[in-house]
Amino acid sequence: MKTFILSLSLSILFAIPSSFALNVETSLEQKADKVEIKHKELPEESRMDIIDKYHGAEIIKAYKETIDGEIVGYQVKIKKGPKTWVVIYDKDGNPKNKVKPE
Image 1: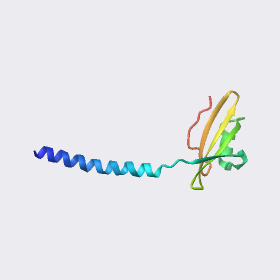
Image 2: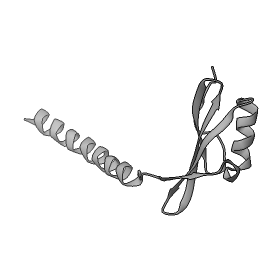
Image 3: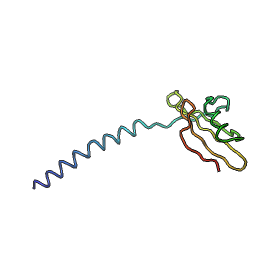
Image 4: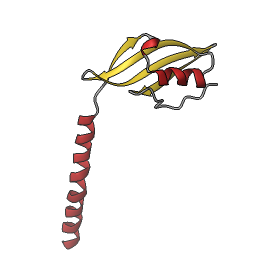
């Protein structure tokens, strides 16, 4: 009986924080609105990153991502020859994903 009570209290103890954390995470995650922009509207850091890492790549499309009107990042589709990549930048123009050109 003591073992049952101990295991029950431990399961309750560990279940409450994990369910609380789950609710906090889902409430913090929001879907960003994506608006197409001209490549000249990208932060200079992201344009320089494309020039440095993807020599000769052409910017096909650029998007600004916002949540509640605040810029949270950028998404840029680039192309070099037959290959295309999507590079994601934070609001300051720093790369968030690592894309290795082939």
